[in-house]
Image 1 (cartoon, helix red, strand yellow):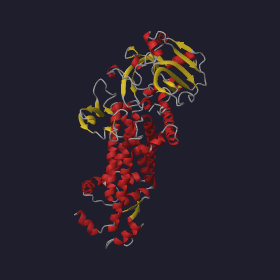
Image 2 (cartoon, rainbow over the protein chains, first blue to last red):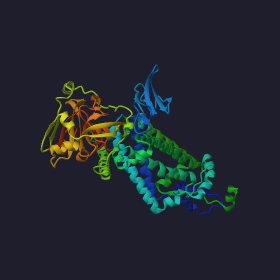
Image 3 (cartoon, rainbow over the protein chains, first blue to last red):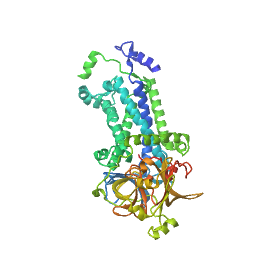
Image 4 (tube, helix red, strand yellow):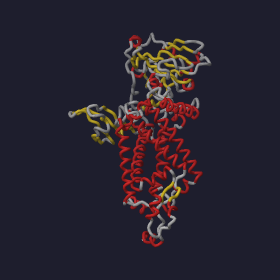
Length: 293
Length: 263
């Protein structure tokens, strides 16, 4: 509230005195609630998922895992060298030394062979059974939340108003890219094109793909939806896609956090906690003309 | 403006300290709450019951697991877990090529059975090329031949109060203070009577090798590998499993794995 008053007093000439109008109700309670449920679920699913991956730190392409032939596209492992044990990560036949993080990690002098390090897994020690308990619990939370959000957003107009792509979005895309690159942010009611792409991409592509590839790995679901694995290229390909989408979601998370820090974390956090968001003061006609010139 | 800058910097510092603190302390923060029997873990485990009911609802009794072609058999079936039981009883049976081995069917049945391998092989058989999915994440396609479990259950006449089939195995998988722990597991009667649930004695056109569970192993094609015990010698019809082993329905279940392995 203090910052509200301050921003009013620092509002330059030309900005209406009643500039508390710049504080708008941007995020509905449904958007805010589902946002935080996703944040919690994805945190636990990521860390338990990395633990599950550690049980078989290889990814394959096809219906099955090649033991007598090679269809491995990604692997994390440890090997003995003259300089002692080393961790490595192998992607498409290219090998990288990742000692300390991937393959061989742990407290100094107490390192062990493990895919992802213990600080990145739940539980921290090797325990596939427990990781699966955590993973599938939050899988239900995540999926239910996505459904609740979809229904709520259809009803309250969030989808149509904020996320649906428009011709305008395409027109403003180049300027959005330049603005983001220069860390120049416009605080408006609407999402910009890159925001729409990122949020829409996560909600309508990445999360559904995560759920579909997750289901495709379930032997029981294979009896219900036998075409799913044929469509995806086999159960092991589904597992590889599942992992790849995880990497994309982590990338989204990192960019999301960086953008929030750059755009003003207090304002951004307030809007996703309370719903209220401070927009930029309205710009004068001549300024608009100048900017678009 | 200057004031705001400072508060933002403070926020950033606090946020990054918080984030790195979480990284440094690792996720062992949750370890103690996740041990078997703890309240939080028991709560999280409810999801497995939900998954079980949801998948039973969707798949019904008889939806078949995908079957594959001969061309998909590209390698020997990968063995896992115990691959050469060191138990004297087992080694004695193996030395005699399982001529003295019997499958005992007991518990909540009208007619307890004791079947030799020949008797099992003389019953109608089913051959299926299916994908074995290990809980660890790998898959392997192989051709399995065996006696449908439902035929054996029909012959023994299951009593109405029976709810689970418990498989008892000859191999010692673990040792505890109270003695050797033999592998065991349970499935419900829906999976037990599923058309693809067989007592397999053949693998890829040959007799089942020791490493894959000779003389007899279970195939439960809509669940993961840990639900398909090897080195079978006794099938017991039960109405519950609370008093066996750790009370969770199987060796791996007693060690924290979900009872329902369809996911």
